[in-house]
Image 1 (cartoon, rainbow, N blue to C red):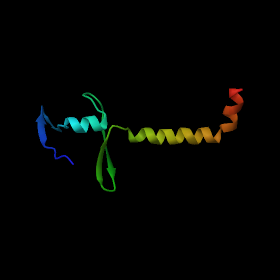
Image 2: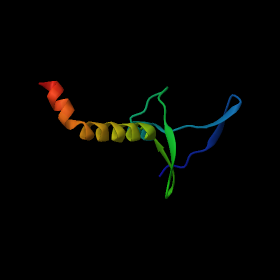
Image 3: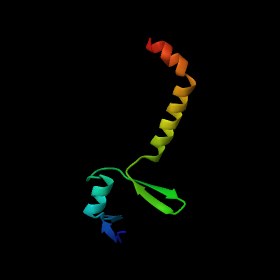
Length: 74
């Protein structure tokens, strides 16, 4: 666990992430991170939570039209 301090950045307040955290999350300067609610609190992640939902919808669509896709592939 890392304790982080809030710091003034221009007119905003931000958090500086240590190198170890950046490496573990595979983040670099300029990358986007997402904060999501979890049953245990908040989670910081580089993965877009909406993207997983879109993938699930796409997979369901492909399952539903599996025969059509096979026919088109021939």
